[in-house]
Amino acid sequence: MDQEQLIARLPDTIASRVKSASMVQDRAVVVVDASDLDAAGRENTEQTIRDILGTDPAIGEVRVAMMADRVQRRIVAIGSGKGGVGKSTLTTNLAVALHRMGRKVGVVDADIYGPSQPTLLDNEGQKPKVSDEKLVPVPSPHGVPSLSMGHLAKPAQALAWRGPMASNALNQLIDARWGDIDLLLVDLPPGTGDVQLSMLQKHKPVGAVIVSTPQDLALIDAARAAQLFEAGGVPIIGLVENMAGYQCPHCGEMSDPFGKGGVEAVSGRMDIPFMGRIPLALPIRQAGDSGQPPAAGDSAEGAAFTDIARQLAQWLDQQQTTGG
Image (tube, one colour):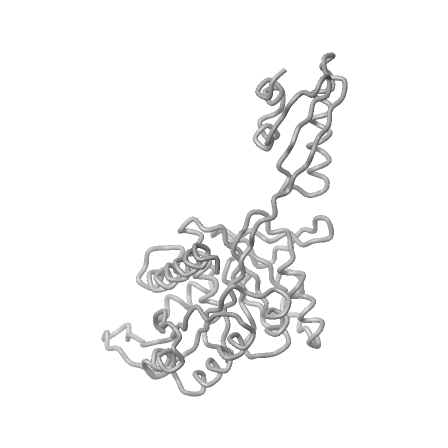
């Protein structure tokens, strides 16, 4: 009995997982890809193979080997030195844009005290399941699974946690059952505290994107955040200027309530790539509140996020090619 004959006896859902099947005298040896199966799934798959093949009088014994190829998962941190600069919105839209490009991407909401991703990704109120003592990410309508303290805590619940507790929560979110997701965007809280240090020390992102508004106070904090990553050996992929320019919906006149060009100037001084600008636009705010990221569509606002996501994808591909 050859491999094709053995596999043909199995259900399609299991046959598609079989890496090899062979007969050694009267023993059937089946090797199965179990990389995205939990303990119950592995047990059920193995038992089904044994039950089906074991009924053949020509097969005296059935042996099943489960293989789980470890996904080489890369982490990109999205950070800022200051709160309220649009870091979470940028993270969501980059993830959605990357998914539309065919990337297997997930989002970790590491802002333990002020989680935003459940609202932005439209999966608020959903709870993650647990498999083999690990969290299973919550799916979203936009094809991007995510995990956040907003999925675990009660709505509007204030978390009074010290640094070690917050760092441990971050570890659980990252070390979850992400399946075939090979890229995680981590939406970091603002600043340079315990969560950021835990990320650098334990999870070592392949790179970081820093977002800031153009005004001087935000730029000082953004530069500090960039220095933290560089000190930890994490390359800065680039800087993004958010809330850059406002077009009056009535007269069409452009104004710059937060200044203009400050982030690009800082990128030049620090020799860090400038990735682009996101406008201060009412549709972006409305889309975020309703869980409909602009990057999920083809609007002008979505195009700004998609352009930055394309640069991020190119950087990641270059790093992979060069072994960086």
